[in-house]
Image (tube, rainbow, N blue to C red):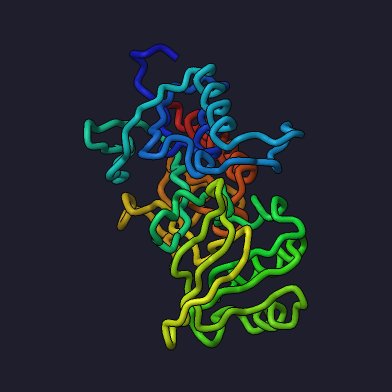
Amino acid sequence: MSENKTPKAIVIGSGPAGYTAAIYLGRANIPHILFEGDQPGGQLTITTDVENYPAFPDGVEGPELMMKMKAQAERFGTKFHSETVISVDFSGGIHKVNTSKATYEAPTIIIATGSTARWLGLPDEDKFMGKGLSACATCDGFFFRDQEIAVVGGGDTALEEATYLTNFASKVTLIHRRDELRGSKIMQQRAIDHPKIDIAWNSVIDHYMADDLGNLKGLKLKDTQDDTLRDLDVTGCFIAIGHVPNTQFLEGVLTTDENGYLITQPNVTAVEIPGVFACGDVQDHVYRQAITSAGTGCMAAMEAERYIGEKGL
């Protein structure tokens, strides 16, 4: 793709979905640009070991995987912009994307801005990410085989993750700030009845405790009723209080569900506005995996290519 060509597609987002979409656009010889945003590579850049992505039998570091995807997209002509999209205008036939620096136009837009895990916001929390602290049981549960771990939350997400983690951990402590769970009755009963799951009622994490190497070795729990403190010895802690889809810049423009996730049409990545597509975690609150994000990125690019062809663009 020559530098002076007007793009026919704009990709917003740079995780597995965005990079894969860019690779497929490049392979189809569609001039395109990609906005990396304020976290190039997405959430995988703060993930240490990725062991469930195909073609890496020995696993791969999250940042390395993202660098390889970016390099592959660059090989096929992707032009990267280290800018964050702050608003869009999809009211005309040619869609507009606004950053703090400029306005860009293209007939097709692929939104791959992902979602952000909700964290507790405790001091030094970021220092424990990848060192015992996680927001994805499917991604990291395997690393805690035969260890005692904790899950924070009381909704269906927390209950599902706690139950799933019993496949690996010797014991799972579910930490909940109230005296009753918020999840569905069947999920509650499944967790309560599970021999490997204990529930720390009326409890919150006061702070994380580290070993000499900076890895998580335990949690200091605070009772929400009397403020007493106690230690919980765990080597892993999974925060399961939900995710926030990164759709703030689309407010009032595209339809979202009650949690802010973009709604795509059945079996495709197209949204309600022609020429606009959504892929990855920004529209997926179920799987939230690198491989599924990459898959929908492929779909979005192929649908964009088909749209461009059908419109004679």
